[in-house]
Amino acid sequence: MERDTHFILGVYDDEDVLLHAVEKVRGSGVKIHEVYSPYPVHGLEHVLGYKRSRLPIAAFLFGMLGTSLALTMQFYMMKFDWPMIIGGKDYAAFPDFIPVSFEMTVLLAAFGMVGVFMVSSNLKPWAQPRIFDLRITDDKHVMAIDIANNSAIEVEKIKEILKSSGATEVNNKSFE
Amino acid sequence: MAHHGEHHYNLDQRFDFSASIKKSIMTVLVIGAILLGIGIVLAMTGGHHEEAGEAGGHAFHWYERLYANLWINNVFFTGIAIVGVFFFAIQFAAQAGWSTPILRVMLSFGNWLPIAAVLMIATFFIANHDLFHWTHAYLFDKNDPQYDKIIDGKGAFFYWPMEKGTFPVFYIARMVIFFTFWVFFFNKFKKISDQEDQLGGTSHWFKMRSWSAYFLVFFAVSSSVAAWDWVMSIDTHWFSTLFGWYVFASWFVSGLSAITLLVLFLRGKGYLEMVNENHVHDLGKFVFGFSIFWTYLWFSQFLLIYYANIPEETVYFVERLTSDVYSPFIFVNLALNFFLPFLVLMTRDAKRHGVFLKLVCSILLVGHWIDFFLMVQPGTLGHNGGIGLMEVGMFLVYGSAVALVVLGGLAKKNLIAKNHPMLEESYNHHI
Image (cartoon, rainbow over all chains, first blue to last red; front, side):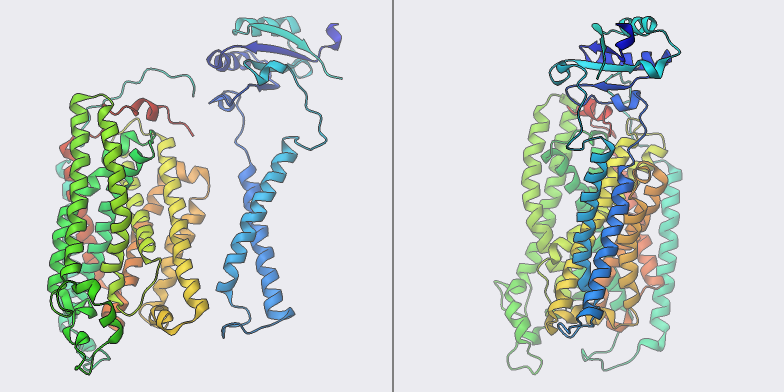
């Protein structure tokens, strides 16, 4: 039985208890796999020690890609491929290109950001989500601890730490 | 964080407008006055502007440049003052809690309004023909060779109900009404805030929200009309339908920069210890976002005129872009007010750290002054304008005068609205 268990779950009723529990559990050297909660808990990512998301960098790069694509496309079309005089302006009248460049920047930044987020969060349409406990969609917070990541600490010791940190239940969970 | 500790902030703190701060501001004022004086003397004695018989049919006088400078700074600093009150009212209309400790900082800018009103009206009567082409009576006289059909068509907007070309009753009435109501609302906000300090409870907050809503409706109309009256009417033939918002955007960015700088200054002096990097971050986001909003309006105005290529509209940009005096400033304007805040304030860290914000906000104040310089001077001075000692001096004199008045007003009452119902929320502001 013990050998099949991959995760130990601490179930918490209250977000304040949870936040302190995260601090305590991490303080005792246990590595937390993930914490699941029915709603965003303010400050949770902070106590979990998560680094800030690098998504803005992806957004910036995709945005720049959009700007360059739009400008290249317009210069190529208007100056080389099919030059037309419009309103007596130059073929390559830069101010005219700005609205399209702006829109392409926003479009690619948005699409790029969504795409990167989906990939990095494993939100692929064919991805099988791992449900640790159904009650995380209702009224319970669940702290999951991967045993493989905490081989230095005994399982019983981890369970003790969870209990003493205020968990109302401590369960085992394994996936196929 | 979800865990709320007990907060022990000094809610009765009051800004000490110490002699040393006054002395530094006075030093800037004196330096500005000296530069202004030298500028005036140079302009009076310098013979290089005495080209008689211009297109307008009159010789250029040095005092015209002085008037134009007065007008630029009147409009610019009136904008900063009213935006302080506007941003204050927005906090109540939006039911915002994060900004509670800095509410009085915003409101303190309104202290400049009564002085701005006097300066604005006085400058209008002194400068009159030298600033506003439409004040000439001959434009409305059908028998005069200089009769102007287009301006005659717009005349009623200035002179109604009097005869065109006489006394601009409607124009002056608007100026007086706008300032009267702005000062009225400012005093009302101050009074309710004071009562809240003494009596507490939530009723003052609800009262303030109602008055804020009334003010915002009035400001929505008055700010736009003020922009037409005070700035767009200089180029009397020309018009732009988004000019009101464009001027408002420039005012708003300047006002936000001034508010941010004052908050950072007070924090540096040890006040407002509950204002942390989260509040500063929000101010930074406002400065960043509305700089882009300003650019959006600037570019919308430019692109439509450029693309449609209608002579009566393009004249505005032709006058500026083909001028040796003004064309470089068009690009300086865009560089300082768009590219700089856009690139520097893009990252989260830059918005949370005072160093970057202080730098960008200071540059933005200069940048938007240049924006108003570009709106006022080409239409009033033509090729006789430019940025010289007179401009720098006048800007410093006005800026330090505003600082004296605003800080003086701030020092009179507690810095923090201690009974504001959302104070606790602002302590826990976390983004």
